[in-house]
Image 1 (cartoon, one colour):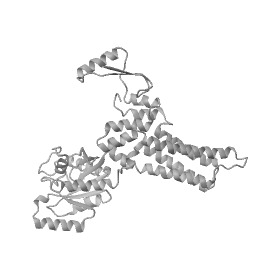
Image 2 (cartoon, rainbow, N blue to C red):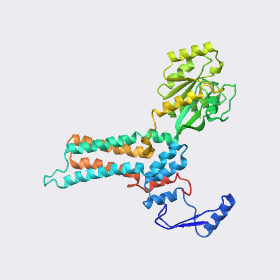
Image 3 (tube, helix red, strand yellow):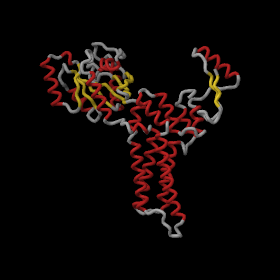
Image 4 (tube, rainbow, N blue to C red):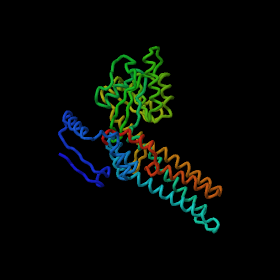
Length: 394
């Protein structure tokens, strides 16, 4: 079946023909070969979405939302992408840029009519408007953590001494045997990554090699990778053995992760007697800071409590329902930070009663940076960088 769609009421605002057929790979390839022999060519990655941008159908933030929608790992990520595709971020950036352009026009008009002694805006009025813009840019910048969380997932490292149960916890959380588990200490030699959907928030969980001093070359490389994973992690689950006391290595791990958003999980509570369990819990509450849970990765005891504790911790720093309407990505953040710097430079110039030319220069640059977010001002290199990440045919 063929569907013929006429411009401009198409995704790219060009005439478009779509072919619908059965999904067998051989049949698809034969139809594709036939089309190519008739003069068609394979689309480049993101080419359809790029043409939609170039034709004015969508802006750059909406084009990026198409990729976010394809890559979404949870419903929260899907909702955020759909909101951005609907123009939520576009509208906020466009309004902010329009206000900056209006302010710039007022200042430049004042410069042009200097000889007539007409002042369009006082320094106080300029400062008020610039301060409001800076606050709104800052509000958008605060959504960066939320955006990173729903797009890429929260990088969560499970760390601890060898044989403490890190791989068992990963398997229990995923409800599948993803990592090899043996009684032999040092079984895990590399960082194993998997995604876990935790109430709509994707966690990029990293099972790591046990941390200890070792002469084994391979295990030592695993320890190095574990320490790198700790540095990169947004969140750390520090596992301790409830059946053993806290020694120097545990103290070192507690110190190394003190500045991280962290959860302490005492594993192997199934090996404790009732009296020992009471004593271990009391000692932990007295000696250790932060959130502590007691679990058995083998029996499943305490795992729901652990999930709830992790969710509470990561939600304290990310994703609120209001932010989902406009959550920026790394590219947006870079442009907004630059725009904010130039706005603050303009405020500083106003405070010094500097000339209108100097103030206007910084505002003009801030306008350009805001325009780069939506694609109002852009370069071919930027477009190539964005669209090359797309799948072919999108």
